[in-house]
Amino acid sequence: MQLRRRLLAPALIAAALALTGCAGRYGVGYTAYDPYYDDYHPWMGPEPGYYNDWLMYSHRPRMDYRRLRPEDQRQYWQWRHANHPEPAGRPGRGRGGH
Image (cartoon, rainbow, N blue to C red; front, side):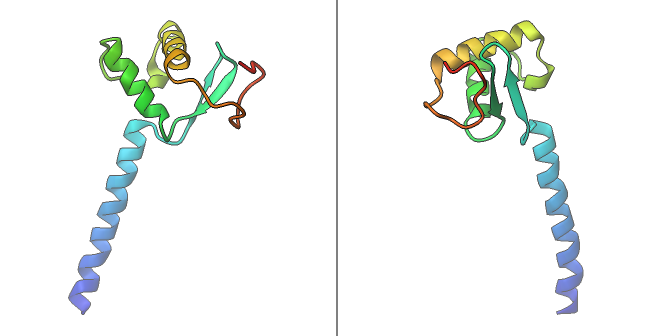
């Protein structure tokens, strides 16, 4: 029993560090502002998948969205809104009302 406790604590710490490292690497849990459509997109749920689709579609190397040049971010949002429109009344929308 005591051996299990001694092994359990390091295993739990290692699991927590591994999961935290993944979240930091992939940029989960922030909100991206789209100034071209004046709305916000939480970077969770389907948004990272849409972004990865755009990276493949546009033949770009993997890069965190936040590190893209403003022109590339504009191109992403144009593609994103043309290919994955938001449902009406989605919370967090800006003044654009498109």
